Each structure stands twice: as C-alpha cells, then as structure tokens.
Image (cartoon, rainbow, N blue to C red; front, side):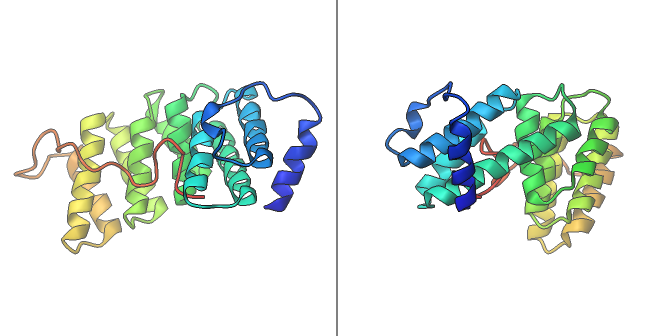
Amino acid sequence: MRRVVVSCALLLAAGPLHAQDPRLEGRLDEDTRRAVLLLTDSARAAGLPVEPLIQKALEGESKGADGARIAAAVQALLGRLRTARVALGPGASEAELTAGAAALYAGVAPGRLEQLRRISHGAPLALALVALSDLVQRGVPPDTAAAAVEALARARSGEKEYRMLRQLVEQDIRAGAEPAAAALERARLITGARPPGVPPDGGSGPQPRGAGASGGGWP
C-alpha cells in the first residue's frame, strides 16, 4: 500500500493536478488527497468515471482507513473500471462501467461481462450488471449468477424482470433455498411462463449491497 502512495508522488512530478474536489478537503491528509486526485486525473484522461473514485476515498476515510490503504483502494477500483471497459466495450456508459466494476469486485470474471455484452446486442447493461452483483452478494456462485442474468438478457428483459429476479431469489434464499438453484429456477420462470401468484412488476426489490456509486464494497 505504501508503494501506491510513493508511485503516485513520483507521477505528480510529471504534471499538475487538473481537477480538485472540495469534498476531499479536510477529509484526507495532503499526501493522500494528492494521490487520490492523481488517480482521478488518470481516470478522467481515460474517459472513465471519476465519481466512484471520490466516493471510494470518502468511504475509506469514514471507516478510519489510513492514507496508504485509501490510495490502494482507489487505485484498485480504477483498475476494475479499466477492466470493465475492456470487457464491456468502449461505448459502455458510466453507469455500466460502475456496475461492471462492482461485479468484478464481487468475483465475476471479466469474460462473463464480455459474454453478457455479446448476448445483449447493444441493449443497456447497467440493470443486468447490478442484478449480477446482487445475486453474488446473496451467495449465488458468480458463474451461476452470470448464467441466470444472461438468460434474462437473451429474453430482452427490462427493469421489471431484473428487479423481479433479485427480489424472488432473495425471498427463496430466506425461505431456505440453495442460492444457485434459486437463481437458475427463478430465471427460468421469469423468462418463460411466470409461476402463479407472482406479481407482474415483481415489486421494487431490495437495492444491491455494496454495488453503489463506489463501484463495489470496501476496499
């Protein structure tokens, strides 16, 4: 972790920081703040989302992490955003890249993100990626969760179906179902004939844990 701060300090000599963020003032020590700003400058230059990096740094500070750990966590997230863009393609939106980084953090392989992109045929992927992370965080193995979400993507599913999948799998797990079996069975039912008694909108569903603006949990 110390090497992250040192490497950032060395790179600072190559040019000035182009963007400050007042939210970091008074929250991070000077060395850590400059290291984080260097990383956000790098993200901005590469056309990657900056806000998840800021949120990651603020989250680390709020949890009492030291400067080296904060810088390392932000650098790791930047790496996941880069990997997500390679997997999702240069046209991926900021929401897709952030959700993709969260899926990578949850343990989903980059190849599964590539597969989801191919299956989607250009349809927006943010909702599918959020559902993917949510399933993994609920105990569904990453490859099984990806298979369930891919089934919905093939069926040209929308917000209603992805929320339904998340809600019903959580419901099944709480009732004692094995997570992998629940995910696959619910995906089958949603993409085919819905089981009796399931509301058409699936409810609002729970929000994914750890897959918000920071692009994954801490660190």
